[in-house]
Length: 163
Image (cartoon, rainbow, N blue to C red; front, side):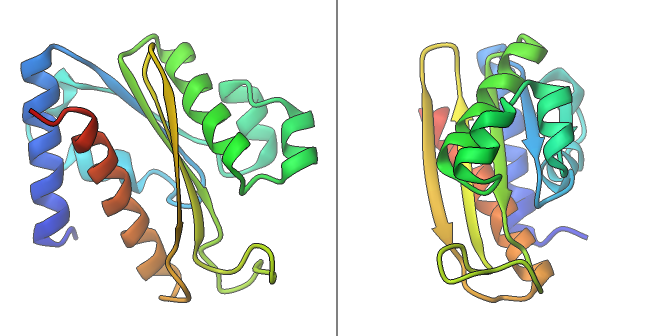
C-alpha cells in the first residue's frame, strides 16, 4: 500500500508525462519494481509508462539493459557509473523519452564502510543528458530504504518535468 505522498507524486508524474506526450521506463535493482508499481497505481499510467526492468542481479543488468560487466567489476553494482549505465541502457532498450534507475544497498546485510546500508545511486536519462544522484538514507530498515528510494526516484522524474 502506498502512502499519500508517494501516491500524489505518482499522480503528478502521470499527468505531466501525458501532457508532454512522453513515455518513461524504470530500471530497478534494490526496489525490485516498486517504482513502476507506484506509477501503475495511478489509473491511465499505461499512456506514459512503457514498463520496467527489474535488474536485481548483475547478470540481469548486463542481459536486459546492456550494463557492461567491466563497469560492474571496476566500480561495483552500487555506484554512479552503474546507475548511469542502467538509465541509459533502459532508455535505449525501450526507445522512450526518460528512464529512471536505482541501485543500492537496502540491507539488512551487504553494507560496508565504503558502501553502507542505505546507500542508493540514482540515474535519470533522457536523449539529451544523464544525471546522477546519491542518497545515504542510513539504516531505516529494508522496507524504509526501499520506500525512501521510490520517493526520491519519483521526485527526480517530477523535477525533470517541472513546469
